[in-house]
Image 1 (spheres, helix red, strand yellow):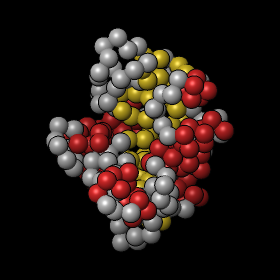
Image 2 (image 1 turned 45 degrees about the vertical axis):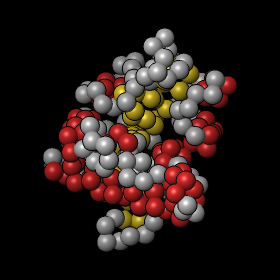
Image 3 (image 1 turned 135 degrees about the horizontal axis):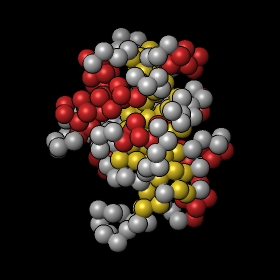
Image 4 (image 1 turned 90 degrees about the vertical axis):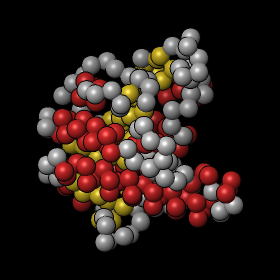
Length: 234
């Protein structure tokens, strides 16, 4: 395997699958099966999942809710998604731990870096919920920070397209996919891969990012076996 410890970043919207809102059980079970295939190869897996299928903090001002309050609402949405993914993973025999940036002992552990690393070393899947516990930070930033803290080898950003394109491939049929990019090229081309904070954290700490299509079965395992798939930013 090319990587030993990974951080998988999933968007909340990806969990909607074929439904208009919330969580699609079929998509949830598909993701759980993909993750199980990776864990069975001995890979240590940490996961950060967004909450956009339930609530996005950036929507706060549009609805008249204060931005900080809206961000906390978004963080709670990520915990709901984390609990759903945890349940799906445990249903197929995997061991998990849900860790939160906001204390809520009844449903998850508080994030403690050394404890998270120990869980990974014991073969448990660690799901990070509630962002970093502070407003104004996206789940992309959370993924980058947590990956650095747990000394992950790579951030794998699962999306619904198979990499980074010159334009939106769903709108522009002439768009072409990049196989590799540097962080500087991504900045200069203004490619909306991750927010600037997340990107800067990865760049300054030498942490590569791979953008790939998580919805196609087998893609996650292919990347970990070293197959050139998706777009590598390093």
